[in-house]
Length: 118
Image 1 (cartoon, rainbow, N blue to C red):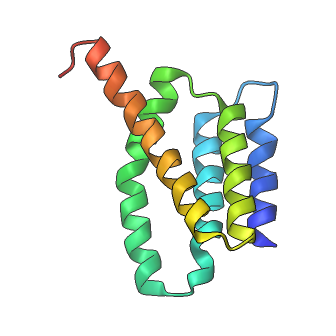
Image 2: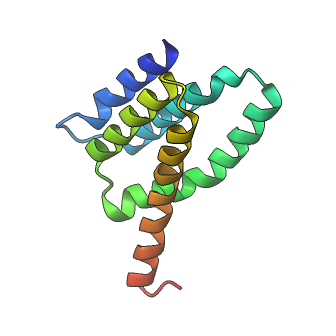
């Protein structure tokens, strides 16, 4: 229920026709992703995941700023993740999450290359 609730709250922003505050989106996106993994009920694993998420999030935010991330497309990915997680389809959940993580990183690298930043 928490996963579906967090998706709903995030969808209100990602599907909005109005301008969205990046800070609000970042907070709701974090809450959503935390809901996806919180069922593991392991404080140690959740702490490791939080640390990794914080390192990754900088690239996600850069991607948001550089490529004008389509929040609607992002919402479609989030819905697919929820479907796979709720169906307990580990293989599909992993595939979708890898794609979801690598997309922003690839966007940032592409932008850096275009602007000769490395």
